[in-house]
Length: 451
Image 1: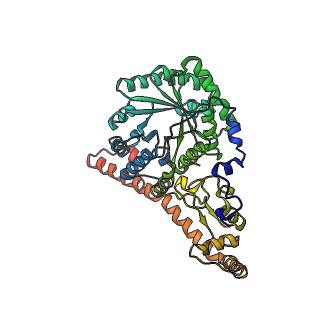
Image 2: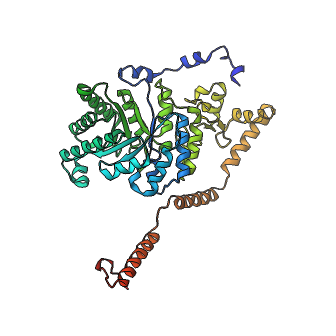
Image 3: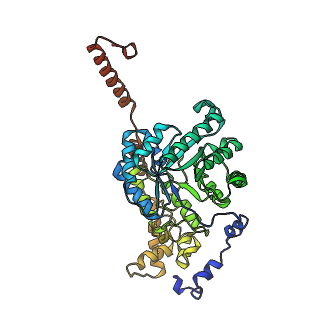
Protein backbone atom coordinates (compact mmCIF):
# COMPACT_ATOMS: atom_id res chain seq x y z
CA UNK A 1 0.00 0.00 0.00
CA UNK A 2 1.39 3.38 -0.97
CA UNK A 3 1.09 6.58 1.02
CA UNK A 4 -1.42 8.10 -1.43
CA UNK A 5 -3.58 4.95 -1.10
CA UNK A 6 -3.35 4.69 2.70
CA UNK A 7 -5.79 5.97 5.34
CA UNK A 8 -3.08 8.50 6.36
CA UNK A 9 -3.23 10.47 3.13
CA UNK A 10 -5.03 13.40 4.81
CA UNK A 11 -1.98 14.12 7.01
CA UNK A 12 0.60 16.75 6.06
CA UNK A 13 4.37 16.45 6.48
CA UNK A 14 4.23 18.43 9.72
CA UNK A 15 1.44 16.17 10.99
CA UNK A 16 3.62 13.11 10.50
CA UNK A 17 6.55 14.77 12.26
CA UNK A 18 4.26 15.73 15.14
CA UNK A 19 3.55 12.03 15.69
CA UNK A 20 7.17 11.56 16.77
CA UNK A 21 8.54 12.71 20.12
CA UNK A 22 11.74 14.76 19.83
CA UNK A 23 13.66 14.23 23.06
CA UNK A 24 16.75 15.92 21.60
CA UNK A 25 14.84 19.20 21.32
CA UNK A 26 13.80 18.97 24.94
CA UNK A 27 17.31 18.07 26.10
CA UNK A 28 18.88 20.96 24.18
CA UNK A 29 16.84 23.41 26.23
CA UNK A 30 19.17 22.56 29.11
CA UNK A 31 22.08 24.11 27.21
CA UNK A 32 21.39 27.86 26.90
CA UNK A 33 24.95 28.51 25.72
CA UNK A 34 24.77 26.03 22.84
CA UNK A 35 25.98 27.44 19.53
CA UNK A 36 23.16 28.35 17.16
CA UNK A 37 25.48 27.93 14.19
CA UNK A 38 28.98 26.58 13.62
CA UNK A 39 31.63 26.46 10.93
CA UNK A 40 33.23 23.11 10.22
CA UNK A 41 37.02 23.04 10.43
CA UNK A 42 38.21 20.24 8.17
CA UNK A 43 41.40 18.28 8.91
CA UNK A 44 41.17 15.72 6.07
CA UNK A 45 44.22 17.01 4.19
CA UNK A 46 46.34 17.05 7.35
CA UNK A 47 45.19 14.71 10.11
CA UNK A 48 43.18 12.61 7.68
CA UNK A 49 46.19 11.99 5.47
CA UNK A 50 48.03 10.68 8.52
CA UNK A 51 45.95 7.50 8.25
CA UNK A 52 48.56 4.72 7.91
CA UNK A 53 49.45 3.99 4.30
CA UNK A 54 47.65 7.05 2.89
CA UNK A 55 49.32 9.63 0.68
CA UNK A 56 47.64 12.22 -1.50
CA UNK A 57 49.14 13.90 -4.55
CA UNK A 58 48.78 17.59 -5.23
CA UNK A 59 45.91 17.25 -7.70
CA UNK A 60 43.94 15.11 -5.25
CA UNK A 61 44.55 17.60 -2.43
CA UNK A 62 43.46 20.55 -4.56
CA UNK A 63 40.35 18.72 -5.74
CA UNK A 64 39.34 17.77 -2.19
CA UNK A 65 40.02 21.33 -0.98
CA UNK A 66 37.80 22.68 -3.77
CA UNK A 67 35.02 20.23 -2.88
CA UNK A 68 35.31 21.10 0.82
CA UNK A 69 35.07 24.80 -0.01
CA UNK A 70 32.10 24.21 -2.29
CA UNK A 71 30.27 22.18 0.34
CA UNK A 72 30.62 25.05 2.85
CA UNK A 73 33.54 24.22 5.17
CA UNK A 74 34.90 27.23 7.09
CA UNK A 75 38.54 26.25 7.64
CA UNK A 76 40.72 23.78 5.73
CA UNK A 77 43.94 22.59 7.36
CA UNK A 78 45.95 22.03 4.18
CA UNK A 79 48.93 20.23 5.69
CA UNK A 80 52.16 20.46 7.64
CA UNK A 81 54.72 22.24 5.41
CA UNK A 82 57.76 21.45 7.58
CA UNK A 83 57.32 17.70 6.99
CA UNK A 84 58.97 17.78 3.56
CA UNK A 85 59.64 19.97 0.55
CA UNK A 86 56.93 18.11 -1.33
CA UNK A 87 54.38 18.74 1.40
CA UNK A 88 55.34 22.43 1.44
CA UNK A 89 54.86 22.71 -2.32
CA UNK A 90 51.44 21.02 -2.11
CA UNK A 91 50.22 23.34 0.65
CA UNK A 92 51.49 26.28 -1.40
CA UNK A 93 49.61 25.05 -4.47
CA UNK A 94 46.40 24.82 -2.44
CA UNK A 95 46.85 28.28 -0.91
CA UNK A 96 47.19 29.80 -4.37
CA UNK A 97 43.76 28.51 -5.42
CA UNK A 98 40.68 30.69 -5.05
CA UNK A 99 38.18 29.71 -2.35
CA UNK A 100 34.74 31.12 -1.62
CA UNK A 101 33.95 29.87 1.89
CA UNK A 102 37.06 28.40 3.47
CA UNK A 103 40.25 29.93 4.81
CA UNK A 104 43.37 27.82 4.18
CA UNK A 105 45.63 27.12 7.13
CA UNK A 106 48.92 25.27 7.66
CA UNK A 107 50.16 23.51 10.78
CA UNK A 108 53.33 24.38 12.69
CA UNK A 109 55.25 23.73 15.85
CA UNK A 110 56.34 26.75 17.90
CA UNK A 111 59.75 26.92 16.23
CA UNK A 112 61.04 29.38 13.64
CA UNK A 113 61.85 26.86 10.85
CA UNK A 114 58.26 25.55 10.93
CA UNK A 115 56.84 29.07 10.83
CA UNK A 116 59.13 30.00 7.95
CA UNK A 117 57.87 26.94 6.08
CA UNK A 118 54.29 28.16 6.55
CA UNK A 119 55.28 31.63 5.34
CA UNK A 120 56.76 30.06 2.23
CA UNK A 121 53.42 28.43 1.41
CA UNK A 122 51.77 31.88 1.29
CA UNK A 123 49.00 30.68 3.64
CA UNK A 124 47.53 33.48 5.70
CA UNK A 125 46.54 31.23 8.62
CA UNK A 126 48.86 29.22 10.87
CA UNK A 127 47.87 26.56 13.42
CA UNK A 128 50.28 26.00 16.32
CA UNK A 129 49.97 22.68 18.13
CA UNK A 130 51.45 22.35 21.61
CA UNK A 131 51.09 19.22 23.78
CA UNK A 132 50.23 20.09 27.37
CA UNK A 133 49.88 16.87 29.35
CA UNK A 134 52.67 16.06 31.82
CA UNK A 135 53.39 12.93 29.79
CA UNK A 136 54.29 14.99 26.74
CA UNK A 137 56.02 17.72 28.72
CA UNK A 138 58.33 15.25 30.46
CA UNK A 139 58.91 12.58 27.80
CA UNK A 140 58.55 14.34 24.43
CA UNK A 141 59.19 18.06 24.86
CA UNK A 142 61.40 17.56 27.94
CA UNK A 143 60.60 21.09 29.05
CA UNK A 144 58.81 22.65 32.00
CA UNK A 145 55.49 24.29 31.19
CA UNK A 146 57.03 27.73 31.75
CA UNK A 147 59.52 27.16 28.93
CA UNK A 148 56.75 25.85 26.67
CA UNK A 149 54.77 29.02 27.29
CA UNK A 150 57.81 31.17 26.47
CA UNK A 151 58.15 29.31 23.17
CA UNK A 152 54.47 29.97 22.43
CA UNK A 153 54.86 33.70 23.00
CA UNK A 154 57.93 33.86 20.75
CA UNK A 155 56.19 31.89 18.03
CA UNK A 156 53.02 33.97 18.11
CA UNK A 157 55.01 37.20 18.10
CA UNK A 158 57.05 36.04 15.11
CA UNK A 159 53.93 34.88 13.25
CA UNK A 160 52.07 38.11 13.98
CA UNK A 161 55.02 40.22 12.85
CA UNK A 162 54.91 38.39 9.51
CA UNK A 163 51.18 38.93 8.99
CA UNK A 164 49.92 35.45 9.85
CA UNK A 165 46.58 34.83 11.55
CA UNK A 166 47.25 32.44 14.41
CA UNK A 167 45.25 29.63 15.98
CA UNK A 168 46.54 27.52 18.88
CA UNK A 169 45.80 23.88 19.65
CA UNK A 170 46.02 22.47 23.16
CA UNK A 171 47.18 19.00 22.16
CA UNK A 172 46.30 16.22 24.62
CA UNK A 173 44.25 18.75 26.59
CA UNK A 174 41.93 15.97 27.77
CA UNK A 175 44.81 14.49 29.81
CA UNK A 176 46.44 17.76 30.86
CA UNK A 177 45.99 19.86 33.99
CA UNK A 178 43.07 22.25 33.54
CA UNK A 179 45.13 25.21 34.76
CA UNK A 180 47.77 24.55 32.09
CA UNK A 181 45.12 24.41 29.37
CA UNK A 182 43.39 27.61 30.48
CA UNK A 183 46.65 29.50 31.00
CA UNK A 184 47.85 28.38 27.57
CA UNK A 185 44.66 29.69 25.96
CA UNK A 186 44.88 32.97 27.87
CA UNK A 187 48.51 33.39 26.84
CA UNK A 188 47.61 32.75 23.22
CA UNK A 189 44.73 35.23 23.29
CA UNK A 190 46.95 37.85 24.89
CA UNK A 191 49.41 37.45 22.02
CA UNK A 192 47.13 37.60 19.02
CA UNK A 193 45.50 34.17 18.65
CA UNK A 194 41.79 34.29 17.83
CA UNK A 195 40.86 30.63 17.47
CA UNK A 196 41.71 28.22 20.28
CA UNK A 197 41.37 24.45 20.01
CA UNK A 198 40.70 21.97 22.80
CA UNK A 199 42.02 18.59 21.62
CA UNK A 200 41.02 15.16 22.88
CA UNK A 201 44.04 13.81 21.02
CA UNK A 202 43.61 10.15 21.93
CA UNK A 203 39.82 10.12 22.16
CA UNK A 204 39.49 9.22 25.84
CA UNK A 205 36.65 11.47 27.00
CA UNK A 206 33.05 10.44 27.62
CA UNK A 207 30.47 12.94 26.29
CA UNK A 208 29.43 13.76 29.87
CA UNK A 209 33.05 14.60 30.65
CA UNK A 210 33.34 16.75 27.53
CA UNK A 211 30.37 18.82 28.70
CA UNK A 212 32.10 19.46 32.02
CA UNK A 213 35.59 20.29 30.73
CA UNK A 214 34.43 22.54 27.88
CA UNK A 215 32.02 24.38 30.18
CA UNK A 216 34.87 24.79 32.67
CA UNK A 217 37.25 26.13 30.01
CA UNK A 218 34.68 28.65 28.74
CA UNK A 219 33.77 29.86 32.23
CA UNK A 220 37.41 30.42 33.16
CA UNK A 221 38.26 32.14 29.85
CA UNK A 222 35.21 34.39 30.08
CA UNK A 223 36.53 35.76 33.36
CA UNK A 224 39.31 37.48 31.40
CA UNK A 225 38.62 37.19 27.66
CA UNK A 226 34.88 37.03 27.09
CA UNK A 227 33.98 37.78 23.48
CA UNK A 228 37.64 37.71 22.38
CA UNK A 229 37.92 34.15 21.03
CA UNK A 230 36.31 31.36 19.05
CA UNK A 231 36.56 27.90 20.58
CA UNK A 232 37.16 24.76 18.53
CA UNK A 233 37.19 21.10 19.53
CA UNK A 234 39.31 18.33 17.99
CA UNK A 235 38.29 14.78 18.87
CA UNK A 236 39.64 11.37 17.92
CA UNK A 237 37.49 8.27 17.75
CA UNK A 238 39.45 5.71 19.80
CA UNK A 239 36.39 4.85 21.92
CA UNK A 240 33.91 5.45 19.10
CA UNK A 241 32.77 8.69 20.77
CA UNK A 242 34.20 11.37 18.48
CA UNK A 243 30.85 12.54 17.12
CA UNK A 244 29.16 12.41 20.51
CA UNK A 245 31.99 14.39 22.12
CA UNK A 246 31.90 16.95 19.33
CA UNK A 247 28.15 17.41 19.80
CA UNK A 248 28.77 17.86 23.53
CA UNK A 249 31.29 20.58 22.78
CA UNK A 250 28.90 22.43 20.47
CA UNK A 251 26.14 22.29 23.10
CA UNK A 252 28.54 24.04 25.48
CA UNK A 253 29.50 26.79 23.00
CA UNK A 254 32.12 25.40 20.58
CA UNK A 255 31.83 27.15 17.21
CA UNK A 256 34.51 25.31 15.21
CA UNK A 257 34.09 21.51 15.36
CA UNK A 258 37.04 19.72 13.76
CA UNK A 259 36.09 17.02 11.25
CA UNK A 260 37.53 14.67 8.63
CA UNK A 261 35.75 13.28 5.59
CA UNK A 262 34.53 9.72 6.32
CA UNK A 263 36.12 9.96 9.76
CA UNK A 264 39.59 9.31 8.35
CA UNK A 265 42.67 9.90 10.50
CA UNK A 266 45.22 8.27 12.76
CA UNK A 267 44.35 5.06 14.63
CA UNK A 268 40.53 4.88 14.84
CA UNK A 269 40.17 8.15 12.98
CA UNK A 270 38.72 11.58 13.65
CA UNK A 271 35.23 12.97 13.98
CA UNK A 272 33.37 12.40 10.69
CA UNK A 273 32.35 15.49 8.72
CA UNK A 274 29.15 13.91 7.43
CA UNK A 275 28.00 12.79 10.88
CA UNK A 276 28.55 16.20 12.46
CA UNK A 277 26.95 18.11 9.59
CA UNK A 278 23.73 16.11 9.40
CA UNK A 279 23.51 15.54 13.16
CA UNK A 280 23.69 19.25 13.95
CA UNK A 281 21.46 20.33 11.06
CA UNK A 282 18.77 17.79 11.97
CA UNK A 283 18.75 19.25 15.48
CA UNK A 284 18.49 22.91 14.55
CA UNK A 285 22.17 23.96 14.62
CA UNK A 286 23.26 25.51 11.34
CA UNK A 287 26.52 24.39 9.75
CA UNK A 288 26.41 26.10 6.36
CA UNK A 289 27.08 22.70 4.76
CA UNK A 290 25.37 21.75 1.50
CA UNK A 291 24.20 18.38 2.72
CA UNK A 292 23.17 17.15 -0.72
CA UNK A 293 26.85 17.15 -1.73
CA UNK A 294 28.01 14.94 1.16
CA UNK A 295 27.76 11.65 -0.75
CA UNK A 296 29.84 12.96 -3.66
CA UNK A 297 32.55 14.29 -1.31
CA UNK A 298 32.65 10.98 0.55
CA UNK A 299 33.09 8.92 -2.62
CA UNK A 300 35.89 11.12 -3.97
CA UNK A 301 37.77 10.97 -0.65
CA UNK A 302 37.25 7.21 -0.42
CA UNK A 303 38.93 6.75 -3.81
CA UNK A 304 41.79 9.17 -3.13
CA UNK A 305 42.53 7.81 0.36
CA UNK A 306 42.25 4.22 -0.78
CA UNK A 307 40.34 3.32 2.40
CA UNK A 308 36.94 1.79 1.65
CA UNK A 309 34.29 2.84 4.14
CA UNK A 310 32.29 0.14 5.88
CA UNK A 311 28.84 -0.56 4.49
CA UNK A 312 27.38 0.40 7.88
CA UNK A 313 29.16 3.77 8.04
CA UNK A 314 26.59 6.38 9.12
CA UNK A 315 25.26 8.70 6.40
CA UNK A 316 27.57 7.54 3.58
CA UNK A 317 27.81 3.76 4.02
CA UNK A 318 26.33 1.57 1.31
CA UNK A 319 23.60 0.14 3.54
CA UNK A 320 22.48 3.32 5.30
CA UNK A 321 19.39 3.67 3.12
CA UNK A 322 19.03 0.04 2.12
CA UNK A 323 16.23 -2.20 3.34
CA UNK A 324 15.52 -5.92 3.03
CA UNK A 325 13.18 -6.82 5.89
CA UNK A 326 9.64 -7.24 4.62
CA UNK A 327 8.11 -5.54 7.65
CA UNK A 328 10.42 -2.56 7.29
CA UNK A 329 9.77 -2.18 3.58
CA UNK A 330 6.03 -2.38 4.12
CA UNK A 331 6.21 0.41 6.71
CA UNK A 332 8.54 2.52 4.55
CA UNK A 333 6.07 2.39 1.69
CA UNK A 334 3.51 3.90 4.03
CA UNK A 335 5.92 6.63 5.16
CA UNK A 336 9.77 6.89 5.09
CA UNK A 337 9.91 8.25 8.65
CA UNK A 338 8.95 4.81 9.96
CA UNK A 339 12.47 3.45 9.46
CA UNK A 340 14.56 6.35 8.13
CA UNK A 341 15.57 9.27 10.39
CA UNK A 342 17.17 11.08 7.45
CA UNK A 343 15.65 11.59 3.98
CA UNK A 344 18.20 9.98 1.59
CA UNK A 345 17.99 12.80 -0.97
CA UNK A 346 18.95 15.31 1.70
CA UNK A 347 22.47 13.86 1.76
CA UNK A 348 22.70 13.00 -1.93
CA UNK A 349 21.65 9.35 -1.52
CA UNK A 350 18.87 7.11 -2.81
CA UNK A 351 16.79 4.48 -1.06
CA UNK A 352 17.50 0.87 -2.10
CA UNK A 353 15.31 -2.17 -1.54
CA UNK A 354 17.31 -5.39 -1.33
CA UNK A 355 15.81 -8.75 -2.22
CA UNK A 356 16.82 -11.69 -0.07
CA UNK A 357 16.06 -13.93 2.88
CA UNK A 358 14.03 -11.30 4.77
CA UNK A 359 12.09 -9.88 1.82
CA UNK A 360 8.31 -9.78 1.99
CA UNK A 361 5.46 -9.28 -0.44
CA UNK A 362 5.65 -5.48 -0.15
CA UNK A 363 9.23 -5.23 -1.39
CA UNK A 364 8.62 -7.77 -4.18
CA UNK A 365 5.48 -5.97 -5.30
CA UNK A 366 7.35 -2.65 -5.22
CA UNK A 367 9.97 -4.17 -7.52
CA UNK A 368 7.32 -5.52 -9.89
CA UNK A 369 5.37 -2.26 -9.94
CA UNK A 370 8.42 -0.45 -11.32
CA UNK A 371 7.78 -2.25 -14.63
CA UNK A 372 3.99 -2.19 -14.35
CA UNK A 373 3.54 -5.83 -13.24
CA UNK A 374 1.01 -7.05 -10.68
CA UNK A 375 0.06 -10.63 -9.74
CA UNK A 376 -2.59 -12.35 -7.63
CA UNK A 377 -1.54 -12.97 -4.04
CA UNK A 378 -0.77 -16.74 -4.45
CA UNK A 379 1.57 -16.10 -7.39
CA UNK A 380 3.21 -13.17 -5.58
CA UNK A 381 3.76 -15.34 -2.51
CA UNK A 382 5.36 -18.06 -4.65
CA UNK A 383 7.79 -15.52 -6.09
CA UNK A 384 8.62 -14.33 -2.57
CA UNK A 385 9.42 -17.85 -1.38
CA UNK A 386 11.68 -18.54 -4.36
CA UNK A 387 13.56 -15.27 -3.76
CA UNK A 388 14.17 -16.30 -0.11
CA UNK A 389 15.37 -19.75 -1.18
CA UNK A 390 17.68 -18.26 -3.80
CA UNK A 391 19.51 -16.21 -1.16
CA UNK A 392 19.65 -19.01 1.42
CA UNK A 393 21.18 -21.47 -1.07
CA UNK A 394 24.02 -19.24 -2.21
CA UNK A 395 27.52 -20.69 -2.00
CA UNK A 396 28.97 -19.41 1.29
CA UNK A 397 32.40 -20.90 0.63
CA UNK A 398 32.65 -18.98 -2.63
CA UNK A 399 31.63 -15.78 -0.84
CA UNK A 400 34.31 -16.34 1.80
CA UNK A 401 36.96 -16.80 -0.86
CA UNK A 402 35.94 -13.52 -2.51
CA UNK A 403 35.99 -11.82 0.91
CA UNK A 404 39.53 -12.99 1.71
CA UNK A 405 40.75 -11.93 -1.74
CA UNK A 406 39.30 -8.48 -1.18
CA UNK A 407 40.91 -8.19 2.27
CA UNK A 408 44.28 -9.17 0.78
CA UNK A 409 43.93 -6.51 -1.91
CA UNK A 410 43.04 -3.92 0.73
CA UNK A 411 46.19 -4.78 2.67
CA UNK A 412 48.16 -4.13 -0.52
CA UNK A 413 46.47 -0.74 -0.97
CA UNK A 414 47.20 0.32 2.60
CA UNK A 415 50.81 -0.83 2.57
CA UNK A 416 53.41 1.80 3.35
CA UNK A 417 57.13 1.33 2.74
CA UNK A 418 57.84 -2.38 3.26
CA UNK A 419 60.69 -3.70 5.42
CA UNK A 420 62.51 -4.84 2.29
CA UNK A 421 62.16 -1.42 0.67
CA UNK A 422 63.34 0.26 3.88
CA UNK A 423 66.49 -1.85 4.20
CA UNK A 424 67.23 -1.41 0.50
CA UNK A 425 67.12 2.35 1.06
CA UNK A 426 69.45 2.05 4.06
CA UNK A 427 71.83 -0.17 2.13
CA UNK A 428 71.99 2.19 -0.86
CA UNK A 429 72.56 5.26 1.32
CA UNK A 430 75.32 3.55 3.31
CA UNK A 431 76.99 2.26 0.13
CA UNK A 432 76.93 5.76 -1.39
CA UNK A 433 78.63 7.27 1.66
CA UNK A 434 81.17 4.45 1.84
CA UNK A 435 82.09 5.05 -1.80
CA UNK A 436 82.44 8.77 -1.16
CA UNK A 437 84.59 8.11 1.89
CA UNK A 438 86.73 5.58 0.01
CA UNK A 439 87.33 8.04 -2.78
CA UNK A 440 88.63 10.57 -0.26
CA UNK A 441 90.45 7.88 1.81
CA UNK A 442 88.41 8.87 4.84
CA UNK A 443 86.01 6.13 5.82
CA UNK A 444 83.84 7.18 8.76
CA UNK A 445 83.37 4.41 11.30
CA UNK A 446 79.66 5.19 11.53
CA UNK A 447 79.23 3.99 7.95
CA UNK A 448 81.12 0.76 8.36
CA UNK A 449 79.07 -2.24 7.24
CA UNK A 450 79.51 -5.98 7.41
CA UNK A 451 80.73 -7.59 4.23
